[in-house]
Image 1 (cartoon, rainbow, N blue to C red):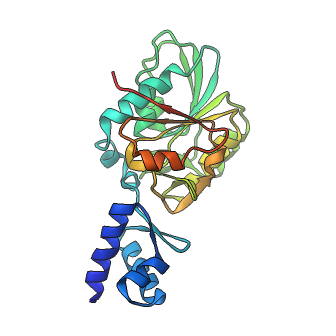
Image 2: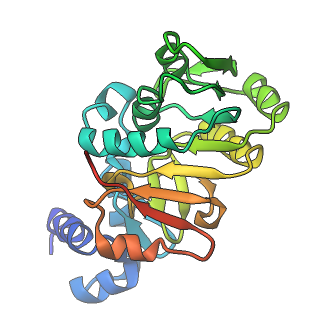
Image 3: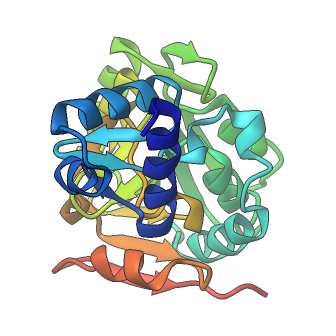
Length: 254
């Protein structure tokens, strides 16, 4: 079998099963595991999959830049954002991550809400300028333009000076084994700090992120308090994410 034929077969298996194992691929395609590992490396360099120990997972489409992500799963993100907005109570201090799901959330906060939102996203902060009774704390640092958020030592110091009631997290991959992940190392570190400085963490996960892996791990799935999903979520992938202590809430549109 030619290399390109193997690559197509690997990607077809990945699409159908959501995960491939090097050992099983080697047996099915009648080649060595070294050959399969080389194929997986080449496909990963092309951005076609994400390598993990023993095999590969689908790459998350949410790794695209902010403008591109704003066109993905728009209806799901609106529904998730609406429900997440209802979870913020008067008097709370909450962290809000950057991203398109969290933007949908802050845009739907009740106009009477009296709370404080701390964010390292200028986009999130700007969306709250016209809100009459929400105080905004900007957590500053170097702007990571791809995701529109601050990273680095400055934002880390600002986070550690606060203790939040909750954190509304955004990631690009949610996998039962690898956990929560994103596409940049510094961004992953900031998210981990935000989780550590919050009493609980809520993740809004559109269906395109479930069962996907990005290069940098933020935290294990068990570190989450609440996972918000939509009816579009694949049942098998969602069942794999149900771990003790994690509340999984299916959010309906409307």
